[in-house]
Image (cartoon, rainbow, N blue to C red; front, top):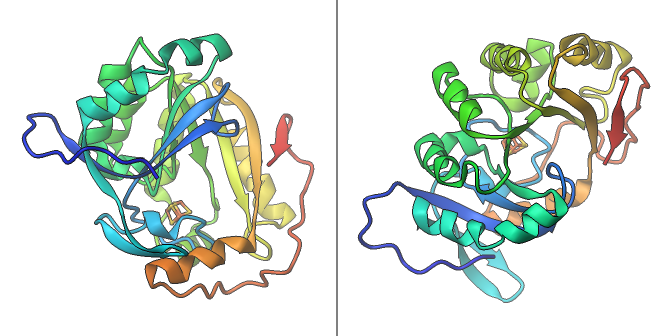
Length: 258
Ligand code: SF4
């Protein structure tokens, strides 16, 4: 958990960060710092980051007692912290990835940080794509790389397991596809939810052929995520068999399993 000084007076936007992970190797090119922004409008029943759902600071019950999850930080303070590793990132082809939660939930703050980092540090966002289209376009202009999560192309399945309609997500995905921006399509593979051949083929039809697509990444479901829920006073009760092994269908041209 990263600790920032208290922000009291600042003209820059402030954002709520709940973690910064060092040496991340699966969040974009090279070795990266991954910044977790608080707040997400989705409620995926398998979510691995329940502490990122609320857009407010909250008490997290840990082994060593309670602590506050979520620290306010100004955009220039965060950018300054990230720029310190500029040479390291340049050496290994890495950079910074913003995730969450859903990073576009704090769009103004995110855009300010991205604007400061532009040209200095390689940036990526990991997003569900659930964000206003004009905002998504602006963020796309400011970032170098995108990890776009695709939970389900079928809207009924999407609504049932994430709580939101995917029309906006698919529109933003189209915008990303046509932009030519390099990206990875990420599929959290959930047993009995989106692991059918039909579901995989629908994702394949959506993503294959997009100019910027580098590869598909399949993220395995881990039921260990459930352990964190009680720490933020939430119940983990996913409506699928958490012991089932999801089927992996070989339908993509370039795909890795994480
Ligand atoms: S989009 Fe990501 S952070 Fe939000 S609920 Fe789904 S898995 Fe969790």
